[in-house]
Length: 253
Ligand code: PGA
Image 1: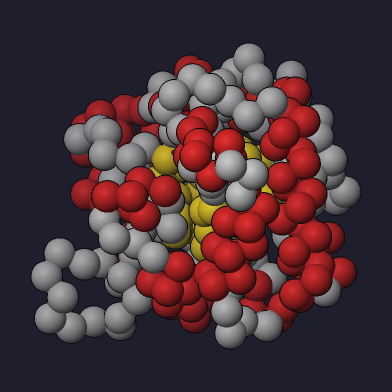
Image 2: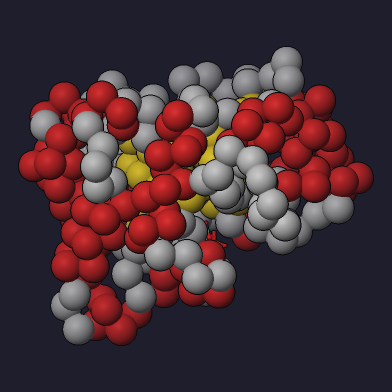
């Protein structure tokens, strides 16, 4: 994986009240205190960001959000801006998760605006792409990923994308217990890196981190991380337990 620093990120989705989130974050900080040479991030629901921020502030666990809205401020009931996320202590933000694309009308165009807003406000975007089962079965995986990447990153220069993280999450592997094999994942990661190379050049292609997501568990993380183009994981279900998530973070031990 070259000299890219691994990132293990937890997406808590719509789980955990404030007190549950604080409890899990406390345990996680303890269990991962010894983690070296790896970035750790958790993305609790918006409502728990501030309280979790207090828990992780002097630890090596970074705080992330699961979404944002691109406008600076205004009459946009229910939306949260990049500046608001920064004010809670967030450093990362997940953008374009397949559940948002599937249930909440997220498109490549809205993803593009959100990435722009994140970068402008110094948030690290974790930009999600991935094909559905039908698309994989009809051999459209690479076409779909090419389009998502192209449209999501339309109008950016390599310099804009220095901090960007890509998360490859095959939709058929999310929450299903079906994982892409490490060879399947590697093949796709290599393809994504080649797309970055083609559009933004070799320097960014070499430094950009590409995470794998979809049923990552303590028992498959090491195999995935052994692949040349897999630089970390975006973990859903298994990140809800501090015990299990810390085993994933400490995959080298
Ligand atoms: P999962 O979710 O680990 O539960 O499959 C991954 C994700 O949605 O980020």
